[in-house]
Length: 439
Image 1 (cartoon, rainbow, N blue to C red):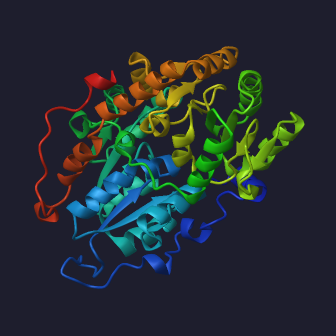
Image 2 (cartoon, one colour):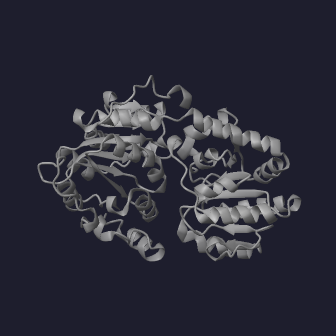
């Protein structure tokens, strides 16, 4: 931590990252989450019985949202707290779960963690994906909490490092009671780095069950503008550094055949909004920033989404959706949100972070994978063939429907970590996890 301190200071000063909630990250418990007073469901310490759920960022918050709702219903005697690491994840979590139930995840220092463990005394800790913080897992385990990793995955990019340090991870993973993985491949990788076989189960990907958020007001205004004056629409979501120029050049080709086409461009990180606007200016492309748009026609231009939390709903307006982080080697981003809207999806060739989901969609001819040189041609072909475009989107929606159920399987598994009296209603049984479907 000391060696990397200059990096964190740089991120705080230049991009404003990690500064928010710093006191919470250092172990100061905010008054808003003070445990409720004594009741019939109190622990020996006098605090309400607690389940602590950690979701790093926006993607994980979305993934666990359905699980949190199901746990609140299934375990009414518990208070659920949700932590995040990123500011954008914190904002979304507070909106979804209530500000009084959300705080920043403490840094992995014993002094920062102990204050929360002692105050909340969680009986169960649920961690989304793969957040193996050694001090946190050790102290939670020593406090008597049961620990589950849900929606667990190990990406191709991370896998070499996990193997390299498996000698250290083996002890860390011994503190975890249950690993619930997205796929059989993830389960095999966890076992290979030290997770006990009996503690690993395949339950599927929670993101397939994630409900679409309520559409913000901007969606209806855009829909009206696009229907009346513009179209077709290309939504480019979660784009990363180096992708925007490639996408904008491809869009210029689209405009030759469709002069009233519109691109909705949503950079992945808010600190890049201004730099992407500069790229648009330098390329002399007409554009409007979402923060300054007054309802004028977007025909033949770009709508720069310089706001967070609205992309998922805006995919509904797309004729074609490109999901970023994939034209350049960044590992790709989640394609589930446009698929839920039945939109034709395009991704680049770098999708290692979502290898199983992309492979599933590819096997069902439910998306297009393109290289940088192919992108303009594939866009023009799909815009010129509405029937092929609609069929691609329909297969994407059908693929999503075929994979649902991970939330209930996960809930059934973690219920075994709580006392029998915790649940008010018995859970249904399930035949087998969706291992074959995700191979």
